[in-house]
Length: 335
Image 1 (cartoon, rainbow, N blue to C red):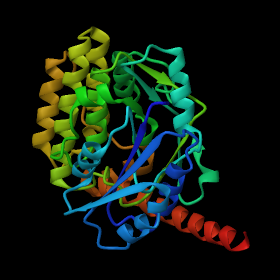
Image 2: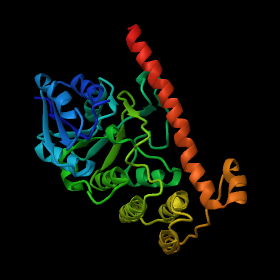
Image 3: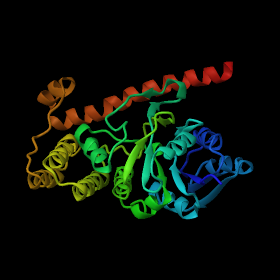
């Protein structure tokens, strides 16, 4: 028997997109798979839509709303797979994604090798997804992967990973207290338990860009605090693997990159990050603004410039998303 792969999908008010996500899971060419959806107390038609896929072997459980991390933990507890494939309810897998990664395992020792893959961002038309390579798109050791993530401020989207169960169990559960970057913190623990990362370019993930993303921090104090906590954990994780000069510099760069998200509203968090940077042998500098917002900051203050820096890109994304949605519907009608 080929190894069983569990495709685990948390869902909350996902009726607009979950049909496409489920189709991409059902259509995986890897034959031995199970698909489990945990409906996290949705108030729309999510459960009714998932029920239509029961004939395709999709299992669904509904629980009271507890958040995406809790839904993922519940889905994992119901799974039996030798390998774990996470999939958000608005994202898509290419049909060969799982098969390509499972077949690539033949080139590596079985056990603690985790697999990653390319991912591209799209709004409504997957054919328009933009796949932009980063320094993480390579075969890497766990410490090199985590160091590059901090050096270049890059990441791997959740669905790119395919993880052996023994590594998943060693990593532990998703942290339900983290309101942001829970995936970054979780997969850092996955890497702590892994021997190597194998990048498989043949399998692809399509990441839907939405304006109400859970990872959006904005002006939420709780999300800011959760982000700083996650960053501290990430720094501890990578230093547990290697505490070299390069790793510490990467950690300082990581803190510097994210500092702008807390300045000037949360100077207490800025102070925490500054102290941590000094412990690492570095110094943080007050974040500035690009030329787009520097004039506004000089005229109206950094608070106004920061709000504009947060708001205007979201307005732009909303316009682009609306246009792409209209074109998507026109293509569906013509088809």
